[in-house]
Length: 317
Ligand SMILES: [Zn+2]
Image 1 (spheres, rainbow, N blue to C red):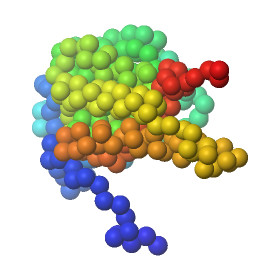
Image 2 (cartoon, protein in one colour):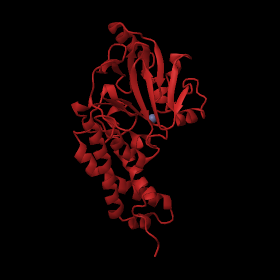
Image 3 (tube, rainbow, N blue to C red):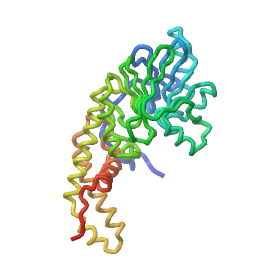
Image 4 (spheres, rainbow, N blue to C red):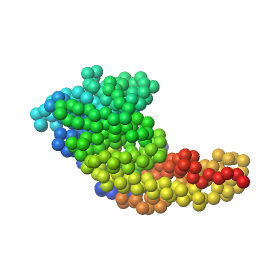
């Protein structure tokens, strides 16, 4: 049994990381811009656009679940518009972001990347019906006179993760890459492609927008949040490069002898800690939980530098 006082302590989370409080039913719904709204349960985020022809929903996280329709109902009745969800856009195939899709029935038009369909076909999950409309590179969805530009710009968090741009609402939605106000989730947001994810903030900033929906935790983001995340990750990479050229692996092999994995583990743990320490100091009080998942995120970035970029590898003389 774990008791509270055995659990580790972490740096305090700055006030700037937090968003609005949720209501009694466990959600908050608010306007992003004009008829675009966002919904959060404090952990996950979705968004929706009300139009004269029905509602376009962006993602359906199961943690928000039935509160998605409640949030739509609340806004639709306040504004005297339709509460019928007619379209559901998938950001990517992950169940934690679209696993409440089936709540919206068979008649809703589901839209997603061709790879989202391909990846969902692996699982045959009734909670996540396949998209009806797919695209490869760019797709403009028009519903009730509104415009939604969907763009695939390469692999990042997953192979199918897309940029959802609403140019008339000054908004960009990109899920599981930047968590506004916070450090990354474990293993660099459980990453499929480290260089792709490091490039993603720059790609996000190449679109014109003011409001950012990142998919996680309790608040929206700004361009400054995306710049800050990019800097945080660049700092981890720079620090990991320094670790690879500074931490000497020889003492680890000397101590562990024929237990090669023990030597490699102890070396990588030491290099990761060496790389993470200055980043934790720099971002304490700037990003929430900059210290919490830093070890696994730094490890993933360090291994990408070593194995993919070839940093620090030497040819035997
Ligand atoms: Zn994901």
